[in-house]
Image: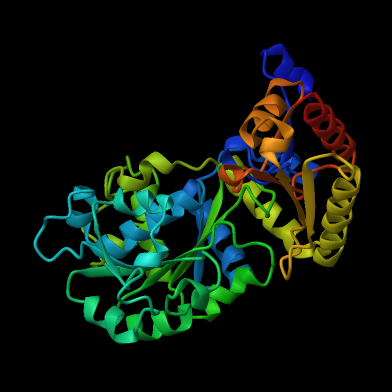
Length: 403
């Protein structure tokens, strides 16, 4: 398939970095591509398709309902919009203007949970209210009373992203966060974009008390890169649908006109804030197919394979002067990797220059850059084919020798 990209003058990438958006996510299985192609040949009402998808997602996650989004970040935006507007037509049509009296326009978050992805939440027009402390003179963990004291009549929701061990971060657990939130009638939105594997996490956050949880569809699930899952309370998912789908329709012919008749909403909201997060029927079907395949996978075999590839990478890089490699088995997640550390003074070059050299070749070799400022980089295995290992090892040895 690289011929397609080469015809455009685009070099392919051997991906030892992982399921990153900037590299296109993951590879889709043939069954997913076939399902998407079949979906493209027939028209459906998107509201019908999303309702059916919601049932599949609910069964997989243990949530009351679900929805297919254009990615986990879109899930954050849509979930926040649902918590702010509910089924209030005026609030829906004003977003991101949250100045209407009575609008809940604050989102509470642990200070240690702030991250660059919460831009999707702020897009809705809310203010993030931080709880907890950093460093001296209060280095201890967030206390329950700190979270509780931040909740008021303006609180739309609590944002709780999966960012590692809560105890290490000094934040309240999801279970305790949800207990406090629910005492005040406040929903909790969990960002679990990259929390798979393990597969058990599909259900664990809802079981722990989350009202909404979002997953990426283009990472471990192996679905379309522009897809994601939002699972949670049925009333919030209904608000998501109303603010996401194309509502250029006459109220008298609207599929959900029963909502008008029963007094739930005055009419269809015209092109809500989520309209920019459009999802096609192909992505919905592709995501559902990917979810089905993921639930059927032999996850233990995946872990064995990733660890085998990581060991091959580590073995292939032994003996290089001024280069140290450390094998990591991936722990409970099993996403094995190899940490490569360069003695920059001895080698006479930097890790940045090494990675740039890998990016100048054909194919490009992409690696994890999390430790780059400390002279290191990571070779991940989730996105590698077996044949890719020799390519990565060979190119790395060539570059390091040349340097």
